[in-house]
Image 1 (tube, rainbow, N blue to C red):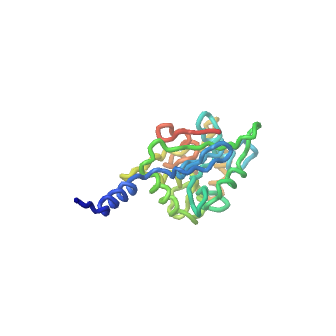
Image 2: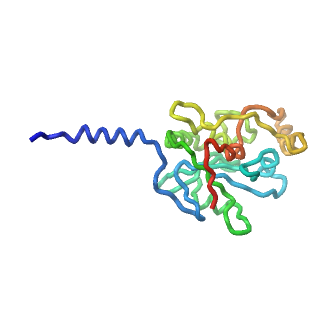
Image 3: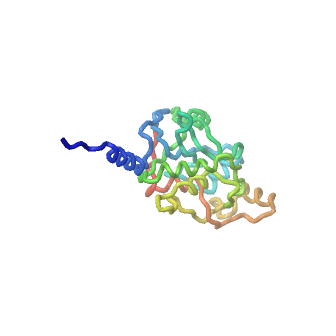
Length: 223
């Protein structure tokens, strides 16, 4: 009788599993949306005044003309689904998924104003989320200028999501702080004037609205 050792087979299976870098197959379902590890969650807000969200919406445009003003990363941590995000009040931190939805705006039909962006190619996704976790605890970048010591929401995604060869999945683009009139929006004029620096018009950067429109990379899901 020929006996085969199970060790080579076991090692081969372990190597195969290690090479398969895909989201967890266990989803969190909330408000009719399935959320998987590595999904991007885009927040939409209606104009409400002269705050940061309005200032972002004034100079950007999300998928299908929506006012996307924020993005977070869904990730499984501590045995539950969390959202890794960069916010002005907390910097880079983890928010429970249900709290993220509770704090969202809701439309007239009671649906959360959140879009789910799922990567079309999940190869390297696990490493991308792990890379994003390394920014946990950094302060929020209120000036939206590349700086290793501070980071803003879409910058967290842009820096973290990479293909296995190290190339960024999302490209930076020239930033624009101009409104529909073609002038620098008042909020941004005031912000940078108070800091004594020029508005970084045209500098490379990113914003959540642009990310939401990247149909080559993302599938956008709604309730």
